[in-house]
Image 1 (cartoon, rainbow over the protein chains, first blue to last red):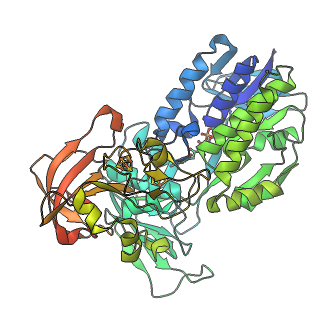
Image 2 (image 1 turned 90 degrees about the vertical axis):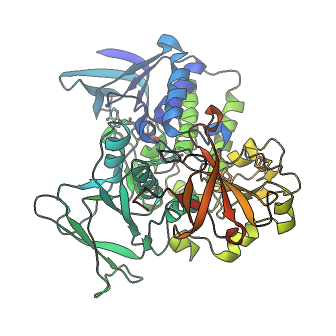
Length: 360
Length: 166
Ligand SMILES: Cc1cc2nc3c(=O)[nH]c(=O)nc-3n(C[C@H](O)[C@H](O)[C@H](O)COP(=O)(O)OP(=O)(O)OC[C@H]3O[C@@H](n4cnc5c(N)ncnc54)[C@H](O)[C@@H]3O)c2cc1C
Ligand code: SF4
Ligand code: SF4
């Protein structure tokens, strides 16, 4: 069994920044990534990101992935990246079992572990939601932007959060019509600058609307939507039909962190963070010493905060292993300060409330 | 309404425009960013310190029309594509807009396109004067269009005639 200092699970922005941070302190790191390509969500984000310069704002997500990978490569063999390698088990003695290339199965034991596994898409129950042509918005984004495949000709987007709105915009960039974007909430959840881009291309955004049913025999042919009242109950007589061959469901993400639950970390359901999350210290350490969490796995937020959390977790995990850099205090304050800035505004209210409920 | 439709009202739009005297003097940025979000590349990008957000990254950007030279550097840097340049100094009957446009194929100089308002509704004709897409804009091309002056506060986007969608 291979034994090592620091294992990072996931190579999204959180995992890559954790690796860069820990390696710059002197730790040796292995990153496990289940995909054939590193970068997590970043590799399909063709739009410019928000945030500040420190989080590469106004760069496109896909370019941020390249920047982080180049920085990680500068550490040579201090950062090893293993692709097509899924962590499938996490046991009490810090043994992680790995499935590589879907055939090799082996164990790794690490002194310290950072879980940066990201999130998964939520789905929605409605009649015929299993018809071909109905996708998660993230799946459509992967098809388009990673594989270059057109998902169809005319799309109905269910969900007006950032993901729904951004994927709609990218669908239009790919020459695909967006019939409408709807959301059951009474107001648009996405940043309004993103939503205004769609509005000025003539895409109707329908708040207080939900999907009633999908129609089709072998694949999606149409969708029926209706208005909902303040308690999200459908209002009879308000049905509208859209002839579409694709429907994207974008009703939010949930943190992906079953590995931590399996390891026995204390977990709690925190709606503000969009699911069950591990309790953690301000330094991203879970209830188990030496086991850290960073990024969407600790609560659904943004790449900007995932990077700051990754840097912080990497710094603290390395310090726990004895790699305490001279500027440890200053770096820690810098990352904590970045997180505070990003969460300080009105859109951060929910996150700050969630942080309180998940604090150790 | 804005929170339901993402279409800014007339009053909101007017508040972001500098006085007409300033527009008639030469190009100036209109920063249509209405919501507190953690974002500040516009401030970082402006070489003249004309956009201020301040220490709290969530604050709404304020553009100082006296400092703004209308250079347009901020236009392609804003991830919200919420900044445009307006210029009323060219003629008494028209105004020029510089807007970000991330769609292919790009329009041709001299092409007549359909001018759209903030809800994407056709309102006028517009003439393409210039298309800029240098590496520094990082794949957010900026298109200069000439529009009849009466559409100053309504024009916000355009569509090429051959295109069906929108
Ligand atoms: C459409 C869309 C638009 C977005 N726009 C923005 C934006 O403009 N600005 C912004 O800041 N954020 C944006 N985000 C959010 C941002 O992408 C995420 O918050 C960020 O990627 C989270 O980073 P992460 O590293 O925590 O997780 P991820 O990026 O999801 O990475 C997790 C990685 O872990 C891997 N993994 C998971 N489980 C295992 C396992 N068991 N074994 C091995 N590997 C595993 C996954 O394959 C993945 O590569 C957007 C997201 C979407 C979907
Ligand atoms: S147009 Fe130039 S001077 Fe004016 S705000 Fe933008 S970057 Fe600054
Ligand atoms: S860069 Fe654009 S979206 Fe960000 S704060 Fe400035 S104007 Fe608003």
